[in-house]
Length: 296
Image (cartoon, rainbow, N blue to C red; front, top):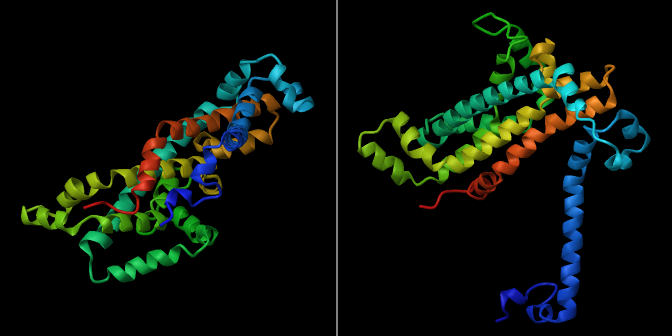
């Protein structure tokens, strides 16, 4: 039987030839350079543009690498353009939205996967059906609900709750968590039940500890999604003091702020999620790899 290692464009024997190894090294180096330039190039250019004069950015965008640095642009963007306050609002919205997502998604997935009520399949089908609806379709009824919250008869307009509460209604996260909970061996829950554990203790002592990888993925995706959300915060947060950086940046671009200050604001807004992903990339990739199930 042919070795699986030889099933490729170039066989193992050919790879040992000096000419083939040289061409492989050249191709790999070129691909690596292309990936670095395409991936880090825009970020590095934004970093340099954030400390470059506006005239140099307009006249010679690729020549700013040789222009002197103007570190005052960052201070002007942070204080004068109120990017610091907008970033603070973005952090608050991201944390609140992530907590709301975790509470609702974990509760719904635990109900459908572990408790399994008789009407569970109907609820699961309804949740799946919402995935086929465009998000824009729900904007009008959701906005009317925010303006006049049922039962309480209060308006959540210009409050962080207007962003936090809708973020919890994520059908995608419920489906992903339910699939992961389904892969947890039922013997674990049955053993906990025999020991006298109730549903809440099974959730906190059995299900959640085994679900840390997928929970980490959902947390990271929720933070990044909340960080770049634009349309909904713009609708429900008309007060500039409450707006996140995704809403503040377009408003800054339409104002009279210099281009260098705008680029500094853009760099400050994108560096945080990039650093966050760089720090937790191992946990994220590990969570994605184990999202399909748990080994018994």
